[in-house]
Image 1: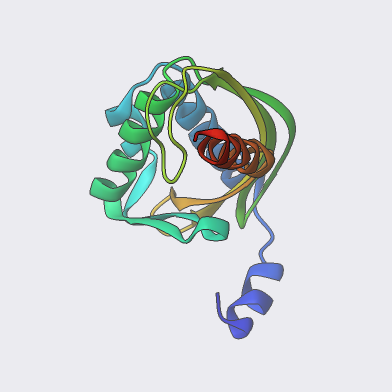
Image 2 (image 1 turned 180 degrees about the vertical axis):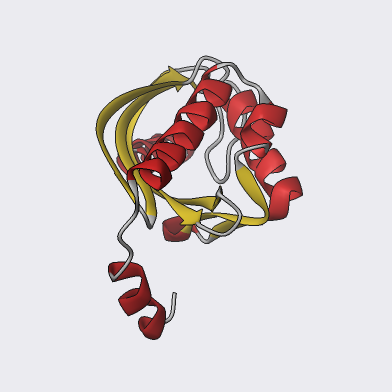
Length: 164
């Protein structure tokens, strides 16, 4: 986001109705995710939405990309559960912090599935498009998978080195 745009975003002063609309759309998004309702999720997004996990260089564009993101994530963690810890709703969008649990059943990004329970933390920013009254995607920050991934790599290396 350009620096000039930050000043505009900081000056936003939503009405109670605008705030309620953002909150209502986030609730609809969350309910759809909990229900594994991909069309319901897509209904909360702009057509040109962008999903990003910057720390791993993963990016999905538009509703086809967002559909792919959710299809892959829900296949990898079919029992995924978000335990919401914090939420901030403002005219710029919604920020949430959650503890995520689930069973890793299929490959997701660079993480091979092992059928094990996983837990990690996530912070997600849902940027809001005030003109279209939809979210422009998600900026996702994940912590807690990296050590598990590193441990698995170490185990594979130890096994490979121990094999005569």
